[in-house]
Image (cartoon, rainbow over all chains, first blue to last red):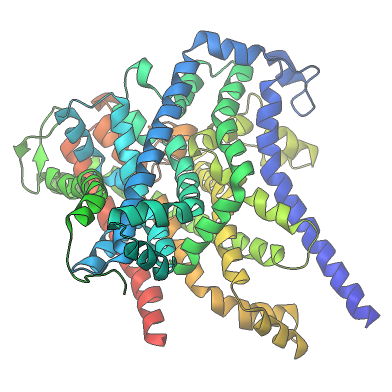
Length: 279
Length: 307
C-alpha cells in the first residue's frame, strides 16, 4: 500500500513538472513582451533576459505622441461595444422565438443559423467589399461593425436558444394569465433570467471582435478609422528597429483582452465547453 | 413544445427574428455565394464586371504562375495543418488528461493554457518574429545557453524551418482551445464510471485507453475540424511573420495569404485582380466544405447510427 502511494506521488510529481514547464512556455514570451516594453533600447540588447533596471514608460508616451493611438483605441472600443450590444439584442429576441414557439421552418431556421459557426466569413470578403462600396460604407467603422455582428449571430443563437429552452414554461404561462403580451413575456420573464447567458455571449464574442485584423485591413484606409490591430501592424512596420516602442505596441494591443480573460475566464470555459460537448 | 397557439407565425415573431436573419444572410451567407459568382467575372477595378466563364479557373489550374502558386499554397497548407493537428491534439489531450488528475495547481494550469488564445494572432506572430530575430537573438541565446548552438539558423529565412515555425507558433497560441475542449470532455465522464474502474484495479493507463479515449472521440473530431477550417483560412500569422509575400520565396504561403495577395495587393506584390481572388476563395470554400463533409460523415453520422 505504501508502495502504491509512493508510486502515485512520484507520477503526480512528474505530471506537475511537465505542466509547470508548459506554463513557463506560455508565460515566458508574454512576460518578456511586457518587461521589454519598459526597457530602453540599449538595455534590450545588453540585458535581454533580466528585469528592467527601472521601469521606463518612455515607449508608451512616445507611442501616444508619434501616432493617433488614442483614436485607434477609441475606434476599437466603439466597434466592440456597438457590435456586442447589437449581437445581444438581436440574437436574444431571435432565440426567444426559436426556443418558445412552434412554427413551420423553425428547425430549419435554427440549423440555418447554427451552420454559420463553421462558415468562414473571410471567403465572402470580395463580395462584402463590393457591398460596402455600393453602400458607401467602405472605409467606415460601420463596415467592420456589421461584419462583426454577422459573425457573432450564429454562436449567440446557439447559446441563447438552448438557455431559453431551459426556462420553465410555467413562468411564461403565469405571465400570460396575468395578461402579458408575448413580447412583454420576453422582456419581463426571460431577459432577467437570461443575464448570465448574455454575459457569456458578449464575453466570448469580445475576443474575435477586438482582435479582428482581416476586415479592417481590407476595408479601412483612413487613419481616423483605424482599429488597434490595424495600428499594431502599421506601427510594427514603421518602427521595426525601435524595439522598445514595438514591444509597447504589442503590449497595448494585448492588455485589454488579457485583463478581460483573467476577470471573466469562468464564462469562457463554461460557454465554450458547452459548445464542445454539444458540437 | 411550448407556446400557445402553436404553428402560427405572429407579427412580433417576424419582428424578433428579422434583424438576425437579414444581417446574417446579407453579410455572411449571400456574400459567400456572390463571391463564387464573381469568380466567373474579370475586370481591373474593385468590382469585376466582365463575364469570362471558367477563364479564371483555367488560369488558376493550368497556367504559370497561377497554378504553381496555388499548388504551392496547397502543399504548404497541408503540411501546416498536419503539424498543427498533431501538436494540438496530442499535447492538448495529454495536458487535459493531466489537469483532470489530482494535481496541485490544476485550476491555474487550466486557466493559463487559454491565455495565448485570447491574444490576436497578429500580436503573437510579431512577438515570435522578434524572439526569433537573429539581430536581437533571444531565442538563439537561449539555445546557446543550453549548448545547442549548432541548431541556430535564420529560423524565418530558411525554407526548411520557416513553415514549421509558423505552425508551431499557431499551435502554441491555440493549444488552449484543445485543452479546454478535451478537459470538458474528460470532466463530462460520469464519476461512477471512473471510480468503478479504479475499484476494479484499473491502472491509469487502462483508464486512459478504455474509458477516457472512447468517450472523447467526438471531441478529437471537433478539435480537428476547427483546426482544419482555421488553417485553410489562416492569414494573420503569415502576414505577421513572413509578410504578404510569404517569405522566403512563398515558402510560408497558405491559402489565406494567397487569397489576400491575389485579391487585394497591387500587381507588383502579387495581385491578380478581384476575379481571380474570387476564384481562389471559391477553391478555399470547396476545400473547407469537403473537410466539413468528411467530418460529418465520420463523426456525426456514425454517432447517430450508434444511438
